[in-house]
Amino acid sequence: MSGLDRGLVEHRLPMIPGKKPVKQSSRRFAPEVCIDDIIVGSKKKEDHLRHLKLSFERMRKHGLKMNPLKCAFGVTAGEFLGFVIHQKGIEVNRNKTKAIMETKPPSNKKELQSLLGKVNFLRRFISNLSSKTKVFSPLLRLKKEQEF
Image (cartoon, rainbow, N blue to C red; front, side, top):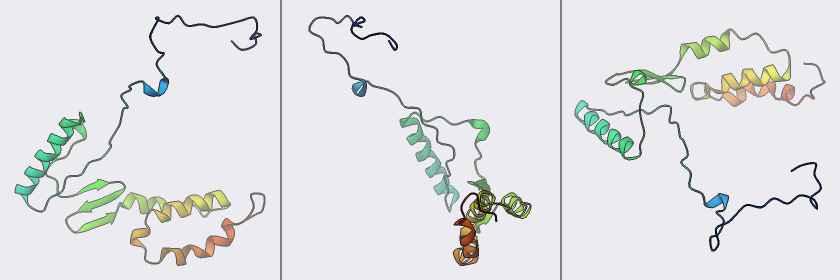
């Protein structure tokens, strides 16, 4: 009751005699969780069927649902978290490298931070990345009003 004098206004909730009020922290609630990607990988086909069955059982036990339109079974390669995963290992998604190559040279601190963030996404594929990007460190220390 904002704006009213507390001495003039009083708010009461009717209570059942002998019952305690329920505190907010003790209320039960059902949080909603979204798991975006799940990968079940196996070396042998027989193992894979067993692993899938176990995964489905656990999902069912915990009430997780899957969107059949987004599922892919029996594939040997696929995109996951921006990387391409296949039998030989992990590769960079070409769209990610293309986005970096097409980025215009940074003209301010914020654009440099954005570019370094994109490059950092590929750090597992670039040996000694920190020494290659340390040349930008002085520019990152500039004040906002200072020019590049």
